[in-house]
Length: 427
Figure 1 (cartoon, helix red, strand yellow):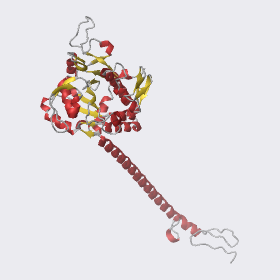
Figure 2 (cartoon, rainbow, N blue to C red; figure 1 turned 30 degrees about the vertical axis):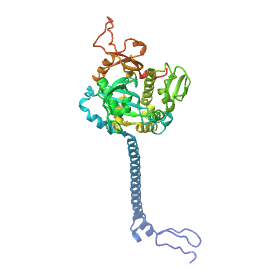
Figure 3 (tube, rainbow, N blue to C red; figure 1 turned 60 degrees about the vertical axis):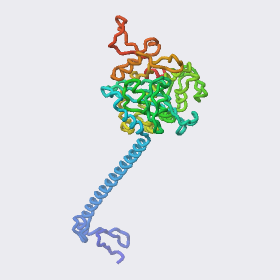
Figure 4 (cartoon, rainbow, N blue to C red; figure 1 turned 90 degrees about the vertical axis):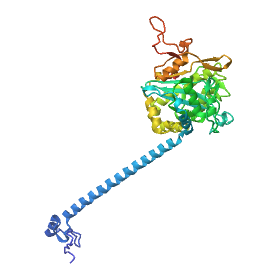
């Protein structure tokens, strides 16, 4: 009764009425130990079940981890693909120029040897488009404010950028206009070719002038130029004197300055208040600025930093109108990658050798034979030597002189007045 010991069928002991624990019987303990007791589910069998449940739980956990990783990979891939498509969709393809150039393919020069490439960079002065209206009223006519023939050597160890003055008088062929009519062939100011027939007319004019075949072209407007400069975090230049130019919307102190996009545009376009006001000095500034921009983009701080690289790619692709050969991210990436190994001192800038036109001092014509020597070197993908202007004040385009006799060596590399990307670095 009150002092009796009560045993439960499950083998666990219970207390008597006085609260004193009772000992389990041997049979129950034996049954629990060997798993053969009543109910067939003692501690041995329960332990095996626990191990099975643990394995199943681990397998479920691994499956959830794998699923999570898979979803993450899909998410990252999806975002990457979306960004890729967005950047590629930014680029405008100039099919009109392709059609026009195909029409005259037989009269165009042969491609450069050794895998060299010639790219024509055209800066449009169009006021159309976002942010461009403040630079003047858009009259529906755009001219090439800046035109640079970029020669990339076949060995990818040098780049020569040749500026073509906008005031240079050249022969412009008959071109198809935006209205579908054809202009007359004429001898006129170089930058009017872009106004007459866009990129195709400019390309054909350059090819006739130089005999160099243009493989690709890029057109950038004011807004695109500013976006590129802002995307790299500004470009540093060294100013010998302060600048106050209302027309260029530019006020800067002398010395080392980091220009944002707006300031950079004013700097490369200004001419009335800088130097002697000529287009020559303006082209010199443009070349120095492009050298500084090349150094900034080539730096690890831009190319190896995704957070900084994406805005650069976004600005670059939104800024560009190109031929189909450069209208994809892969094409542009391959081009940029091929230029990464070019030493800074081998990125050279010069202007087409020219002199004042006898009948109008505000216009230029080619200076011969220096111009022909330069064009021949580019056609053959042969080295071009560029030295500071003061070094070649009277010998631009001459061949190098033999160090022993002082006489000209026709087999030597011609020397031209210009600069290289290292000149753009602030000391």
